[in-house]
Image (cartoon, rainbow, N blue to C red; front, side, top):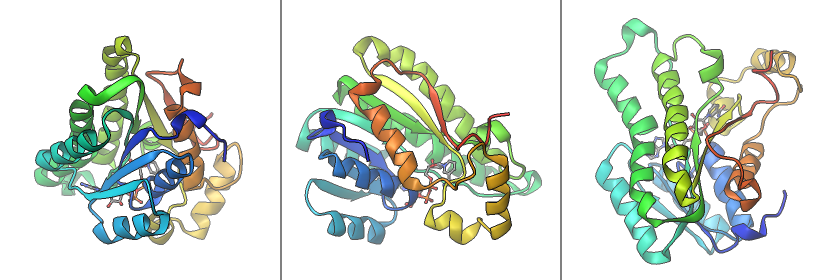
Length: 248
Ligand SMILES: NC(=O)c1ccc[n+]([C@@H]2O[C@H](COP(=O)([O-])OP(=O)(O)OC[C@H]3O[C@@H](n4cnc5c(N)ncnc54)[C@H](O)[C@@H]3O)[C@@H](O)[C@H]2O)c1
């Protein structure tokens, strides 16, 4: 893994850090010597990760659909550590459902966790974001390839890109950058368990420019780059981490 010395001792907030790509980012920022604070609904998973990694890391149980939880978490971290250098909006759910089966409550709940939470963390962190800070919002390759039976999820992921683009303009004068990472299909534990069959692996290897499967750690490495000062000229952008699946 590349080394980004400027990330050492910087406060990094990550949502949904107990599993999957979020967990890989917690590990990656921790390895750079950053002070990592992550939140998740999965209390057991969060505590396990803190125990494994040790110092300079903290976990808070947060339900990102609850404004009060987000306010408390961000305020607590800012009070304890001061300036926030990196905010990563990673947590999201990706349910599958046919259009006619989507209830209004399910639609609204998904938007609360996948989109409203991104706005709320940005709003609450904003007064504590320093010059040179970096905000990273997670979208998805599905914004580009528009799979069926994921309309609510894809709508939230499209909106994450819109949020990034507008906030990049608004926060730019303060020298704060805002970018999007859109992962391709990433081999997280959950994806492997629930969705990635041998035939999907074969299909991905055919459809991507580079026929290797994408790993959570590889997404984390792009997050490190976007968080570091080395990418100081990059803002308002979407970076696809998909080995060229969308390249046609
Ligand atoms: N894995 C993929 O193939 C893939 C592809 C494209 C985009 N993405 C995006 O990458 C990001 C991470 O995905 P992942 O695959 O690692 O997901 P994951 O399901 O493995 O992990 C997500 C984490 O977020 C937490 N979370 C979900 N809702 C929450 C809430 N309301 N409050 C607090 N925590 C909550 C979960 O408990 C979990 O620990 C998401 O934004 C996802 O949309 C993933």
